[in-house]
Length: 590
Image (cartoon, rainbow, N blue to C red; front, side, top):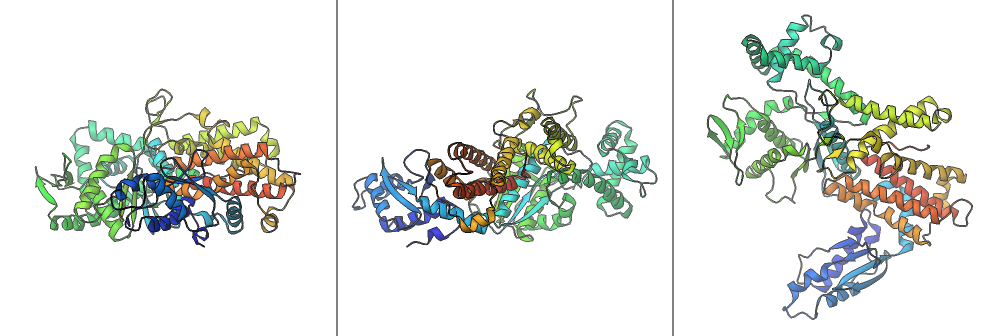
């Protein structure tokens, strides 16, 4: 008996192990063939092995016993090791091997998860440590909806990797270094003479403060500009007064960022541009020693094959830039932090920049030439957030919307909808606040994550806060309804997990059970392809499958009550884990 059924994780992978054994027996000479297993969409079975078609041209004419793909398919079917996973197999068309999974095995697997926890179904990835670089706002500038996308997508990817037992270094690569600090510091010295003791209120709105300093830099006579440029030199040279002023501006900005992260429930460790600054000269020396850095028009650059423009690593004035910092950060993450996978979550406009950085790293031998080997670096690009006019999302004054205000409005609208439904009479004030936050912030997150990240999406409060269709509100309500069914039964669900037996006799019970078991492979797919929308689609379909099951399979007071309550509980657990991976707080009553 094969032990594939004892392993955890993806159904697809478990079946692939069985078909791998079959392939080695069926075509022993073709040692490099990987099993091609996919979930079925038709009525032929639950999964399908599609190797026969691609195998046939390879073995044809090599004295094979087979007379075409269907015969290869039949042999693959015969050579599958016995397994309690499989109820039956059949061959269709040009050798597709269809597999129907055993009802009792599906039920047993769900029961095992109920008793041992959802961690039983965590995918197994071939990565031990990953860096996820996300959010990354600029000091003294407001976080805008572009940062919202990076923060939400990055947090979700980090959560999926963490669930898959990967050690994740969550990195906030803030823009805390550069020429803009010269003008900010000089403006601070003039506007707030006692700046060392000044509070946040003395500086006021940091965004307005930045604009004032920028206006002076651009429009006043050259005196302020000259002072600002000298201030940069002093700051970068380590002058204590300038370093202290810089640190104060950074702290005020951080407090502003933290208001956003606290609302979103996101944790990050800051490793700003300034962190990598001391390492830049050493990294450039390593690149120069490898013969990668060349002089060009007074600057030092790295030329890349197939790219018209080089990477400038030292500007003609001797200063460093984004490329210098990003090359250094990549080196640090590979050599000091020993990451297997480095993921950068920024807007799609930076794709070329990162592609060039990765190409240079391959030239330096830091990354393998093969994109599928580890260590690996990926850029996770995303599209724009649009207003209802189809243009970049802004307020009426053409300013980009403040993120804190946006999130607060989502909560306010959510609370108003709850009060309209009379929940202020049923809930305590604390319950009302927490539910409004869970729904409001969850709605904003889900509206972003359910789209393929590469596409633009339209920000619309009415749509995202609707309780109909593919929205967080609909899904949170669906979860709360399942919890309500279990509560109304009056049964002790923990006791039922130990004593009752789950069975999947009705077709809708089986559809729901199989979908629950496909959780691991959907998380793995979302994770490895860096596409959180895959998990959103899985969650929405789970909710739809549960609705169909509940419509056709009454639970309370029926002979199958205990079994069906276990299926309700399993659905609620998987839904909660999906919410957790998307950074959404579940709601238990509504």
